[in-house]
Length: 444
Image (cartoon, rainbow, N blue to C red):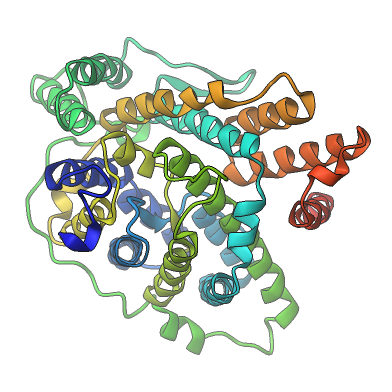
């Protein structure tokens, strides 16, 4: 275990293993959700399951070996929806997959020339702290939705769900149980919280309290088996996709626009996630920089490229990595365990795909609490610093986008500094990004 330098990072094998399992369990939903979304393009759902698991495995392993950080990677939410419902619906999934591959290559170039690293380091300290807090609210919002505690409402956008129903009620019980584990300093508290909540759900299903109803999002909680051989990806991989693209019909300019859209969202989602989770794990140095950032971004770029070759949408760093960090994960051994579990899931998929959202929701909500603690480190007395931080925090959950939170936070920071005669405090990179952000907003 010298590879991961556990002692130097103040951790041990059991802590890292529990952290890796916890991260996996909060990310496992992607094994079900990603194939469901991408299959709308005509891609085979079974093959997509295999591609999703393999891409996550490779991404996590690359992060572990290249950067030694406890970050989990998998095909990202939001990016998969853009892939399926925007790009593929107009140009076909083959073009969408090719665009993701090109995006990965561009990111590899950016990583070697430190372009993404420069963007990360240009973010002021107050904004870095606000990203962590915003991610806390965002991940809490995701958890509340997964549990059915917060639901969509046509009048008010969101509203309180029926907390008397089984899933939300079990999630609320899970929050209490998990918090008690944390207070009692139970090792692996978040992991055990997920497991206990899931077991309670299975008991409710056996006794008839919980009734399976897929239309209402109430899925079977009891595994139908243990082992299932993974489907082949031969019909959805990049080589198959590239052979069927008619470049006489698809214009190069169309591909460039699509690649830019993937680049923009993925870049700032990844940077936002790295800032937020690293801040919580105390990985940032006194200057707000992340050691081995280049390696972390390189791992992300390699994962995106490899994921496209396998047949899935953009692979990116997951905000759910914060759950493993909260469990004590501090090294690449955490991401190694997470990656290996994605590989194991290929064979034991009947077990992993029945982990319900209401069981992982308590962990996401509690991790949100851990991350929001950084709000005390934000200087709200200086409004040129405080307002951009506040905007970043609220826009992430309200816009349901890490990238959009960064966009509005960056722009408000630059404009306020300029209009108050403090433009020298803004770096050149921030000015360049602000111009690009304005162009993006105008073109949407």
